[in-house]
Length: 444
Ligand SMILES: [Zn+2]
Image (cartoon, rainbow, N blue to C red; front, side):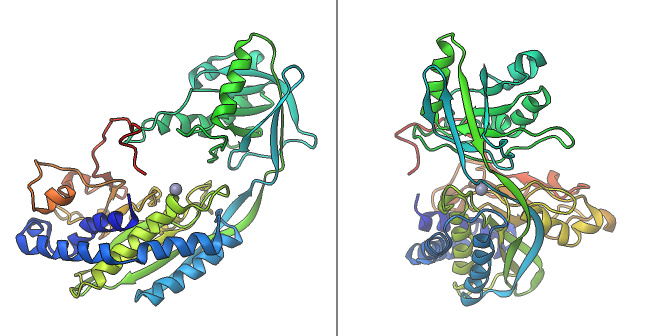
């Protein structure tokens, strides 16, 4: 899907700024929406933003100089496009650098493998780790294994190739292995951890991603094998002979800082009510993050700009935020991801609520203001822009009508049950399609 089309679609959410929801479906609103959408389709700002971002700075790991430089550039970009009150919100971060890594089968059937260290995994000792592999087909199998079956070995978890699903349900179980697997293996005394790369591709390009270790427990080096290499190792294990692997990594952490870039298009009559359009600035180090999440930034800045350029100033403030440190974040009370930092720093959440969950999500997640259904005591009032997160397009609550906003983009509504709560209300206004992508339906 093109950035222009995504931007135009994203406008459907931004347009709630024009009018109360009750009247958002009227013909005049739809007409204005269509005019703005068509203008967005003629605009090149989304492609310009993501092209410049990825070309000028390349990969932007959280806390790196590239991410910091990109943030400074993005602030200038917002200013140049008429955003006001542009500022950079810095926060401390434990950064992670991959360094050099390698993986290979040694001994019988010796051969090189393609692997990537998992984010925040530690280095191997000098000379690497060499041990016999013990393979598990699920996290449950690993958790149930006696320590003696794992101690001193390289744990290999292979759930099989990930199936791409529209609702992410193929991705979730795999990321659970990535997040928790190394910690479980370490607690059982494993020497290292290897998993099948999380991803639906069939290339020898392993998907990285971050892992987590339980505080106070030992950490072990952890890696993802590319899909063909994962197949190869599983076939070797299936031969029934011992399989030995050698792993090396020079990955390390360091003290640094990341930052959020924030710019406003002030509202005309209710400027203190804020509609946040969020994406994240950082990328993994193995690519330039054009899609995850450069495209998100492109969509949000272009959508906000299209509304601003429409000649009708929204009542509420449109705020574009490029969050720092989404990918590799290891949130602590002092450090964290950009979304959490923004939530902690943005009153009144800080006074009434625990920190919100990260507000960033790939591909231009939109956080839109909802009108509370009823008033609550002051101490429990939600943020004025209590938030609805839409990771894809809004739910269609009724049969779409051709020519209406719901027909164009799906009906958008804020569930009143999402408010009030003691924590910021973050609800997902999305359907959860379960249809797998197929080669014919997979988006390009
Ligand atoms: Zn992302």
